[in-house]
Image (tube, rainbow, N blue to C red; front, side, top):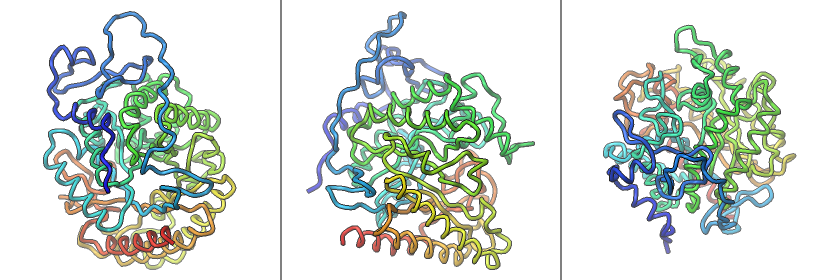
Length: 477
């Protein structure tokens, strides 16, 4: 029998079913910005008391000290738990056959009928392929005039949240609950394509952002070192905490939600501050939503752990982190080159398998489940054209899925999530960068469109479906 969402959760959703608020209601909660309806979040006050976080007073004096968080259920019915090295549901092992699907938040935006239709088509197709978890953004940061960003953003200005975007997040969450589909929701981003840490630093007065390529004179090294300063910047971190305080309480009753600190946070040269940020941020989320799981969004070791400031064991040591994540990127890490996929494939596969096995071993030392949360592979010949062949990608996926499957029984490995679902829409200019008006597919705005997208018609999706069934059988055994 399908259970309904908790009444408080549905009331919160219904109250956001429209962008229309009375002027008095709206001014209680925020400010009117040109061209949009925004709600002002309080940086130091209590967690939002209503569905849009409207404060109960507009007095100009300093806000009272926040009350202790309201205790939530230790376990949400139907939610996931961690027991030892296993993810579990209803006291039985749960193995993830997931899919990265970053645009869900934006497609769910209130007022975007076409986006909402695409979202539901895509969820239908993914669930039809046996997907039991997606990974998407919980927030995006503006301003929307910045290059190669997801727009429109949920937070176009610091501490101001667009009501249509928040309504979209809530109806997305209710849709996930209705479908019994789990979702990892990313609350930040080391990379610039959603705003993320770089934008928080800019708001804190550390800008302008030194954008990486394809920005003119862009440098990945300069950008990463700039973003690494986030963990030592109290203003930037407090703005991030304000976002957590605003969003997390609104979804704390949804058993389908899993929180993620950020997409691919890297410690760089700020490792002690990085570890402190992980523990503090995850602890804050736990205090607001004790019935939901929290993870990091980490890439794991990467190909250059010394440069990136990464250590799987130490990065996931906090008691507030429930499970470990790691990512795997053969082309991005120069393990294979698109102009010679056939010649480079044996080496790339060997390195990938070694990388996966190493992370399973590291997770055993930590004593927590580990999820292969991102991986991808180029189309044949490095093509960006949607109907081009995927024989080498399918071969690679077959091997990686097979290895993960083989590790489920004897290690903390708990699942796999390829990057990224594109659905039935195609890029109008394959290989070029995203522009306003283009469909949102599997490749974020800062990447060449069609690079890692998995389309509904791709043979890769059929392969994912077959492996989903095997993973489900393992969980049921």
